[in-house]
Image (cartoon, rainbow, N blue to C red):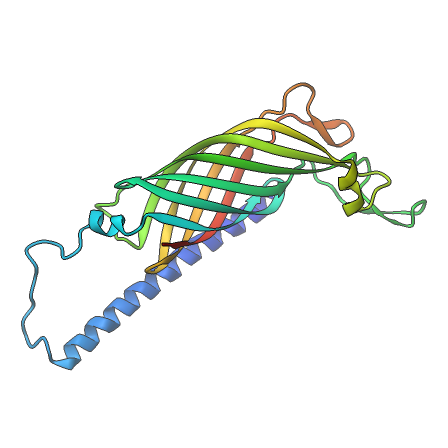
Length: 242
């Protein structure tokens, strides 16, 4: 899993570099076309104030929605999110993630008795659905360009945990006997938005969740109960503004 995190971080860095380079290249090409056109002559005109201020642009970005691709110690997952502007650089948001849950490596092995692949000692198929609401604050907006907007966020909400029995049940069949738990959850996070075009963007986010299960925990594998369903979640989000 450590290697996966390293590859993801390298991929994130590469994406940021590529998008910034492509944006700079397009901007330089547009300026070159203006110069070749000759319509500007040898003069450079500068406005005494920005034609569109940051706050004015923000007024047109009232809502944002999109989808997430998630990586954590539990493996891969997915999610959706929604944002609504409160004022200036402060946004309200809501998000729902879906991911498997485990705290040990689980490998399938061939079982002669059942004539199939099984995970030794596995008790439950566990899935978690953190539903959170919170606030997101964009920072350094005056120093950085619109194409690179870092932010910090925090949120709270319930996490729904579904435990479906594993031994003797097929995947879909097991959900008929599943038990659902609801636990409180909270997180703090940070990330950056990389804008691709005016109304669509790529977001890279890191969150640390705290989701205690309580009691003796919940077993995915015998003898290794999960007592905290939180941890570090990395996500790459694609969104659209409207």
